[in-house]
Image (tube, rainbow, N blue to C red):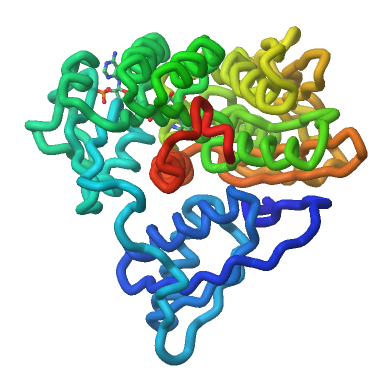
Length: 402
Ligand SMILES: NC(=O)c1ccc[n+]([C@@H]2O[C@H](COP(=O)([O-])OP(=O)(O)OC[C@H]3O[C@@H](n4cnc5c(N)ncnc54)[C@H](OP(=O)(O)O)[C@@H]3O)[C@@H](O)[C@H]2O)c1
């Protein structure tokens, strides 16, 4: 699979950002990979020198792979490190500890939790779950756990990170938070797509910021790439593979695995939710395509007119098939389409996601990477949080300044 770092664009080349990272511990490697991720998703190339010897280099390579940064050029630094190139210090722009509430502590939320606990400049004020007795790894401290969204907001967070699996609870929580001027980072495409205009207006009215990068593409920063493309000129067309579970299933079905076994494998790997119907019916991809279309073509974008489902009756043929999401300014569709000869999509392994954006003048941007799973999706949520703090708000809804 081509990697997140291999953004292909016809835009003028800019000097790469030099980073010097220390990766003596796994947490430093994870934070270093996060720093690289944020640069790349902002459309910047990086050159990375790694301090701490060969083990540190291997650790950082591993941390990059875990979030889908497959082809970063990492070089071992000989001699003393100039860590001034790598601002891994406190989160910028905030006076006291930032009060963060985590809604959901499953695949995605459980990936964000250790990052929150590691930061002395973040105060985790609450963790919203459905079942307080459930055994989780990692386990939040009992005094943090609440089961009522109102109780979470009563802890007066500055930011809510929404990683709930119930879209209606998510939507109500996002509305309640934004209406109080609390910033929101959401991973829920169904919740955001259900009322993106209303949520954006609410955020603008209260001065809060709403970000939802993880909701589209998991670890692949698709919304950012669309915004970067739009800054270059009008967009003619978007083509994308947007659902990691369906991509995983199609790959398994193509090599003869039974449908139910492939689905169980996707669930065990954390790609598919316990109820996979949104993935299989195409509803998940439809919500994502809608959000991409809105970013590409403006507020008049609609949900796709045609959405094909994947079921046990699917018969794989000799050519690779993908759940292909295609949109232009007139509308969109989600189909199960053969993609032989299209290297970007045909090569997508496991839960891979990819996007190709064609500008009106014919220029093309593409990006691919890990579309689901704990590490890449949590990284995306974390990057939204740190970007939000870096820009220290004033951005309005959508974080549209990206
Ligand atoms: N998994 C991925 O790879 C991925 C990728 C991109 C985006 N997303 C999105 O991220 C979100 C979370 O996905 P996930 O895979 O992390 O789901 P998950 O593992 O099922 O975790 C969902 C969390 O939400 C909590 N929850 C659900 N309903 C609730 C309710 N009514 N009240 C309070 N808490 C509730 C659950 O509580 P309990 O722990 O008590 O059950 C759990 O902690 C979803 O919107 C999903 O579409 C996921």
